[in-house]
Amino acid sequence: MGKVSKIWATSENLWYEELKVIHPYREYQYDRMIQLHLKTLFPEYHAVPYNRKITQKGFAKGSKPDFALIRKDFKEWWIIEVERIEDKLSHVHKQIVDFINGDYNSFSEAKYLAENCSLNYKDIYQATQNNPKVMLIVDDMNSKWHDAFKELDTTNCILKVYKNNKGLELYSISGDYPYIYEEESHCHFADAMNNLLQVTNPNVLTIEIEDKPMSGLKNKLKKAIKKAKDYWQSEESSDDANTFSITYKGQNSEWKKIEDTGKVYLQPIGPIAARANDSFMLKRLSRKKFILEDN
Image (spheres, rainbow, N blue to C red):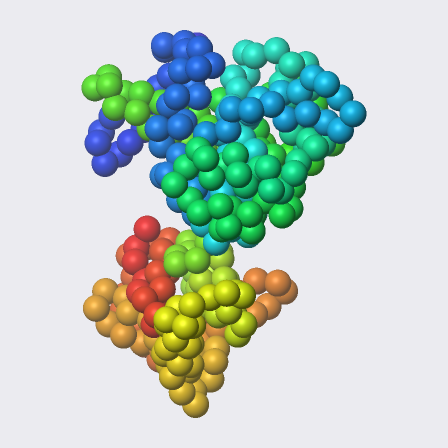
């Protein structure tokens, strides 16, 4: 009986097998694989090396994480620890506790991070004014590990690596991890009879532009922000703010937003192009214009 986790890539007609089973790796190798693909795994964040000790207040000993993530709008930052399920749980648990209860200094953290990347110190400082969130990335999860971390204020991300017989890799990410939805959303027809398209991420239907620019912003940037606001507002026109223009298979139609029991749906106003399936991606082109694609 096979115990190897496998993924079937239908587009390639190939099986991908779990790498740690067919070719066991060490922690530094797993860490390296992740760091090579950080921009793809967490596209809304800047990845920065972080190799200094984090200690709890009043403690001499501390722990070193693997790297940090800084959100691109500088609203938050993360401390990241990468481990394998085979690693010693008590050691990993101690590290995570150190990171959660770390004695952080916003000025010192911003300075250190700026020295290890090309980002501006003042921008980074916006993020480090608050303590970081903590994420554990592990290549598997079992009940023992789950129970050890469930009471801690940490985010647990399971990231598995697969490989096919041609040497190509495939990454599977699950659990919890930072992701900012802005430009697109999965959706499906929850009620085919009434053409109710449920939008998984309702934020895709809304664009928020701050009225007050950041302090010290140059006049040129202020004008650019005003111009962007005027553009979005001009698209609103006098139509219902809950009405959107969506193009599917080259056919444009108007849709209205419906909210019911905490869920958000879109319903076409009039006929729409025939569909072959019920799974789609809704992609925003502008404030009121979208494109719907089969998924």
